[in-house]
Image (tube, rainbow, N blue to C red; front, side):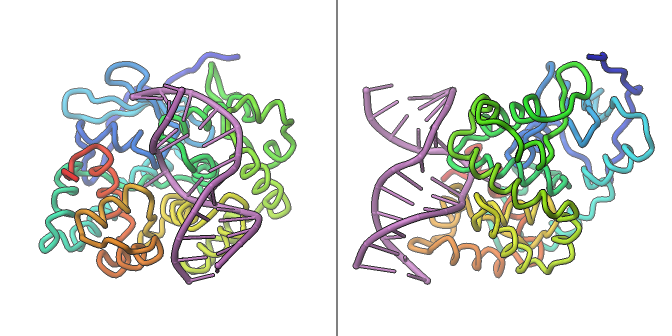
Length: 292
DNA sequence: TTCCAGGTCATAG
DNA sequence: CTATGACATGGA
């Protein structure tokens, strides 16, 4: 296994910064499962076939990668929303009249939705049911190590659907997926027949995209909403999970609402960037910043 | 030891 | 359409 060769550290030029206090929540807050704190002040993650490092040098967020291509730089800029498209949408959220949302925005300034591949988000959230974030990250890591392709050292790509479909019971068992193994393999079997599924799905309007995703085994309303939001960048998608139920029932007074009703409220109340609002509320609630 | 986790699915009313 | 359990695994 070759050892990694790194590009020199360079500033990650973001139109709107990710403050140091937001970075851990940004990288390991439950939307991406491929980042981990490698040392104090150095995060490492895998994006596609590239291993990426991030650190703060003083007030400057810097990156370095195993991939020195221009394409990787473009990928990074997109991944971290370097142009700040989301920040402009955050400005249009109803934070002036919504004190709960206001608290959430203040708790993690600069937080954004990472623009991951649909493939990555689907694998991650197929593993997510009834699991804590830390355990999801472990499962995804095991999948990469067991069924992915080696990059260098102990870094691996995520497995293809083909690799997952062909995996042995022993291999899947070693990933400690529990009953989610059937979700992954079932979805893999449906997707190996349509290798261009990402582009096909991308053409669909959001409502149809969510419905189509739900035809895959292990993908219900919540996972579909997450993949739609994180993997396809549909900011209006509003995943309702246990934390969102907590927030909406307790802080917004919506007791007795079904998940479907809560989703409709979220979309109506937060509008075109409901999913971005959701991410702020989720992060803040999960880390006890909303006082609920 | 018991409980619960960024839910989904099958089944029953 | 809504309500209820089972489901694998591991950490608190």
